[in-house]
Image 1 (tube, rainbow, N blue to C red):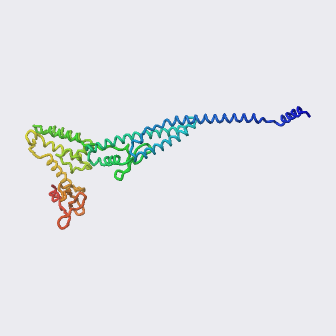
Image 2 (image 1 turned 180 degrees about the vertical axis):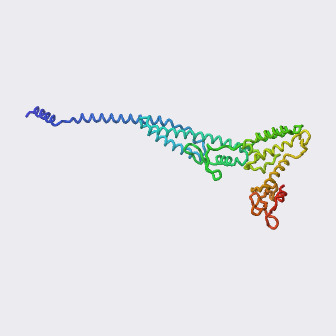
Image 3 (image 1 turned 135 degrees about the vertical axis):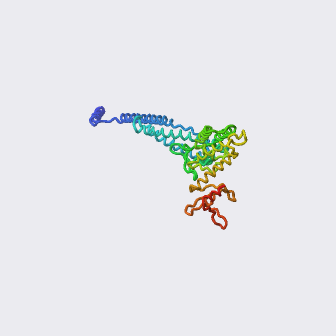
Length: 373
C-alpha cells in the first residue's frame, strides 16, 4: 500500500473514532483560565477599593503622644481595638453588592457606631485636659465652696487630677474607680460650686443701707428686706455656701445643719432679725430699737432659742451647748430616753466623764438649759 493510501486510511480512522485536537483544547482552556484569573483580580480590586472607601470613614485625630505614659497605653489599645472592629465590618460590607440589604446596613451601622465612639472619646479626652487646668486653678484660688454638698465633686475631681484614666467605656466615656468616690464617669461629673461671695457682699450692702436709715423700719421695710434675703439664698448651692464658708463672719452659722428641713428658714430668720437691729447704726451709733447688740450676739441669742426648743421637744440628735472641753472640742447634750436624762457627750457621741469617772448628766430640762452657753 502506498504512503498516500496509509495517510488517507489513518484520517478515516481518526474521523470515525472522534479525534481530539489537544493543542487546540489546551489553548482554549488556558485562555479561559486567564479570563477567570483576570475576573477574580478585578473583583478583588473592586472589593479592596470598596474597603478603602469604607475605611476612610474611620477618623482618628487623637494624638496619643500628648498623654501621660500611664494613659497612652489605654487610649492606644482602645483605638486599635475599635479600628480592627471597624475593619472587620468594612471587609464584610465590601463583599455585599446589594447595598439596600439588611445585612449591608447592619455593617454600616456598626461602622457608624464605632466612629461615634471615636468622636465621643476625643471630646472627652480634650475636655478632661481642660478640666484639669480649670479644677487646679479653682483649688489654688480657693474658689470652691467647702459646703458638705460639694464633697463628692471635690473627691472625684481630685481622683481625675491625680490618677490615670481608669477605663474607657464602649461609648467613649472615661471612667474611674475610687474607694471613697466609688465608680464614676467623666461625662456625668459636675464641677464643685463656688463660694457665694457675691451673695455675702449683697447682704452686706442691704445691712449698710439699713444702718444709714434714720427712720424706724416699718412693716413694709421689713417685708422688703425679708424678700431680698429670701431671694438671695433661694439657690440651694448659694445657701449651702453661705452657712459653710465663713464669708460673713458677723453671723454664726456653725450650729445650722444644712440637712435640717428648716435650715433655710432658720437662716433667713437669723439674717433678717440681725439686719433689722442695725437700723440707724451709722446715724446714731445704736439701732432705732435701742438694741446695741452686735450681729454676732444677736445670732448667738437666736441659736440659744433654737437649742431650748430642741431640748423642750426631746430632740434626739446631739445638741450643741456652745461649750468646749479642755482640748477645745465642742460639747453636746444627747437625750437618753430610757434613763430620762440628758448626757453630756463629745462630737463622737461618747459620754463625758466627770468626778469619780461618772457620766455628766442633767436630770431636767431646766438643768440642761442652764448649761447652754
